[in-house]
Length: 220
Image 1: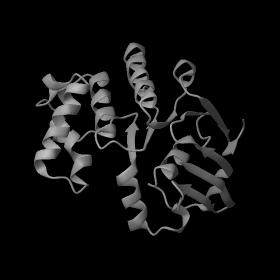
Image 2 (image 1 turned 180 degrees about the vertical axis):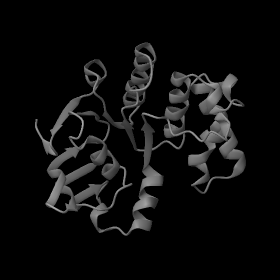
Image 3 (image 1 turned 180 degrees about the horizontal axis):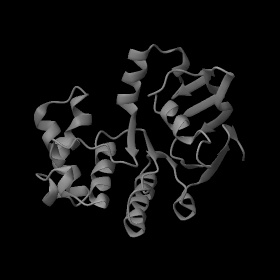
Image 4 (image 1 turned 45 degrees about the vertical axis):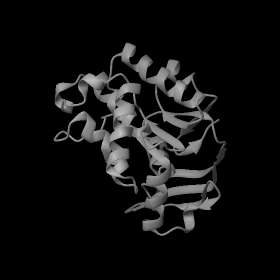
């Protein structure tokens, strides 16, 4: 599904060039569950943003389902993102002025889906994640764990090929963290490819493979 070859990310500073990522090379097979680990500043979130096609300022080669992302213009890259990638962030990134149901509808609004079908998909997802009773509530009326559950539901509602999760359990209680990670494992068992960034050894162990970064390099 994913092939990276000598991917690098750097910034020009007064003292020279500062590298965030150096010569990143690895493949991700469809259906894998991968954990990316490393200390703060290792480049984990930057790598995730590049994999999610949110960042286009880098060098090297990146193929997503055989599409050369490194050759795509921003418009085509964003389109590929919307069609294939679901994101889960540590701080949820739900829209405070929208209800749970309206937040779930956002990824569907980016696709050519009729209103009736969108409503049906939202209803099915609310039921699947057991949050039907929360559909008319706003994010501020939910606990942190509930907000993250909604964030995961929003990430998967459009059935993406790839889910990227950046410290998805970092802001919630450990029991809620297990619930979220168990959910990722279930989604992976159903065929969704998942790449997560976490500091938690327990949640990292759910993955088929762990990639460790340090100072922008793959350590192991």
